[in-house]
Every structure is written in C-alpha cells, then in structure tokens.
Image (cartoon, rainbow, N blue to C red; front, side, top):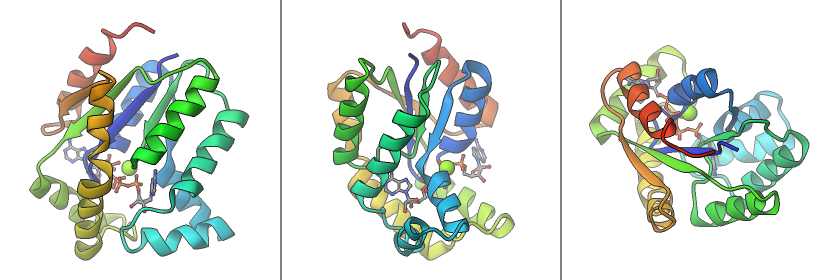
Length: 191
Ligand code: AP5
Ligand code: MG
C-alpha cells in the first residue's frame, strides 16, 4: 500500500497538498485535526476535552489521538493507502503508528516534510483566520502552535531520517509548484 505521512508546521500546506494527493493517487485521508474539529462541532465528550488543548494551540494527549487512529485502521481499512495529515506529532505517536501498521504487514513508504519559513506560515494562518475563522488561527495561538511544532513534533524528522523515509520538500511557491515536487518523489516509490 501507498502509505504517506505529510509532515510540516501549522500552515505548511498539509491539508492542501493532501487533497491533491487524494485526487491523483486515491488515498484515504486521515487528518486528526479535522477529526477533532468534527468532534468539537458535534459536542461529544471527546470534542469537549480536545477543545481545551486545541484552543490554546497545545497538542491533545497522545492516548486520545492514538485511539482514534486505532479505531479507523480497524473499521475503515484503506484500499490503496493512507495519507496521514497531522499525525504523528510526537515520538510516541510515531512509534504507535509503526506498530499499528506492522500488525497489518504494512509500513510508511515516505514522509514528505513541507519546509516553509516561519514568517510565511504565520502570514498564511493569519490570512485564513481573517476569512474562515478557525478558532486557533489567532496571532497568539499561532505562536503557541509553532512553538509546540518546534519542540514536540519537529524531532520526529530525525526518527524518520534514521528509517531513511524522510524527504524534505520546499513548501514555498504556488500550490501546483509544490505538488509537482511531491509527485516527483511519490512516482519514484515502489508500492
Ligand atoms: P491540525 O488541524 O493538524 O492543524 P495544523 O497542524 O496547525 O495545521 P493547519 O491545518 O493549520 O495547516 P496545514 O499544514 O494543513 O496547511 P493548510 O493546507 O491548511 O491540528 C490542529 C490542532 O489539533 C493541533 O494544534 C492540536 O491541538 C490538535 N491535533 C491534531 N492532530 C493532533 C495529533 N496527532 N496529536 C495531538 N494533537 C493533535 O494551509 C494553511 C493555509 O495556507 C490555508 O489557508 C491554505 O489555503 C494556504 N496555503 C496552502 N498552501 C499555500 C501556498 N502554497 N501558497 C499560499 N497559501 C497556501
Ligand atoms: Mg490541516
């Protein structure tokens, strides 16, 4: 299967590029952020708990997102592969993901890390906040999300580099320019 992790800081274009990957390669999109936001919208217990972290730009507890992934893998197995967007975000999540896939004799084929300057990230998110009003797209929360990314999530790059799976992608330019860079990497993969 073609299992891809799309990795990067808040605003790096994970969601945007995932959509293009789904259209071209027919992958199943798993965005833990989208799942958590829909739990909040539906006012579930899980959503209420998650909102406390998300509104401050902090990560929700590992156990919570790992459980969500676990359920999805069991009940909605992908046919062609998964595109993981916003998961894993900690080393513990990375290890849990490897375990879950290994149980199905599967693995991650590549980790695409979208590299974008912090000033550009902030600009994109502020702009989105003015239009769509995602709760966490405020100047203060964006700052906290970027700090959390640098401290807790970016170290995963080393984890995947050691496994020889990390590919850095220049995440600046137009959406199509970036996707062309991604296609070149994915089309070279064996799956
Ligand atoms: P999540 O929903 O994953 O948000 P995020 O990582 O902060 O990233 P975004 O969704 O804001 O950005 P993106 O990289 O998808 O970029 P996008 O394509 O939208 O997580 C939200 C929260 O949920 C977390 O803070 C945490 O609390 C919790 N959470 C989620 N997963 C978790 C986990 N595994 N563990 C623990 N907690 C978890 O693009 C951004 C904007 O830029 C858009 O407006 C877009 O139109 C624009 N844009 C995209 N590409 C370009 C381009 N090339 N040029 C110009 N503009 C562009
Ligand atoms: Mg996103």
